[in-house]
Amino acid sequence: MVPIVERDDELFLILTRRASHLKHHPGQISFPGGKVDPEDIDAFSTAVREMEEEIGVTTSRDDMLGSLPALPTITGYHVTPILSFVDSSYIASINEQEVDCLFELPLGLILDKSSWNSQQIRFNGKSYNIDAIHFEGHLIWGVTAQILRAFIAQLGFK
Image (tube, rainbow, N blue to C red):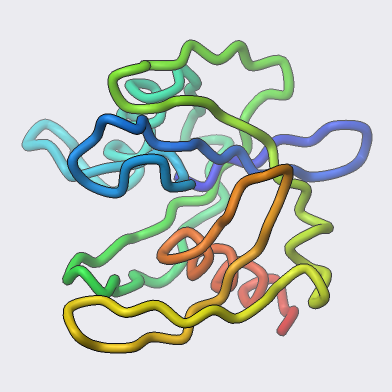
């Protein structure tokens, strides 16, 4: 889920820092989300369920803006980002088994080209150039940065 909240005529994206004890991607910045469960009727259902499980925040189909194209990850997964507005008066309830914290990233920051930098990582013996952005001590990279790039491209920005 790419949860979007409006505050004082500015848009923010809700992001989480994954719990440090997790087996996969501990401490990394991500959007709420996860794998499809058998009871999920579609990607939106999965996204809403996962967001509620992780941070206690929900949204409705009426607030859904749509989805971005599925994005492949270097670990072999495909992620389908769902975009939805969240009420600005949301009260988060962090599931500490999955999430250390959440924060709101200003949309204006990711639209500013000077906020982005390129980094090189090695994974399974291969080198990858990846986009990254820093915000309040958080390093946003990997599939989360890919989602942000896809989102701003969908908005018509490069």
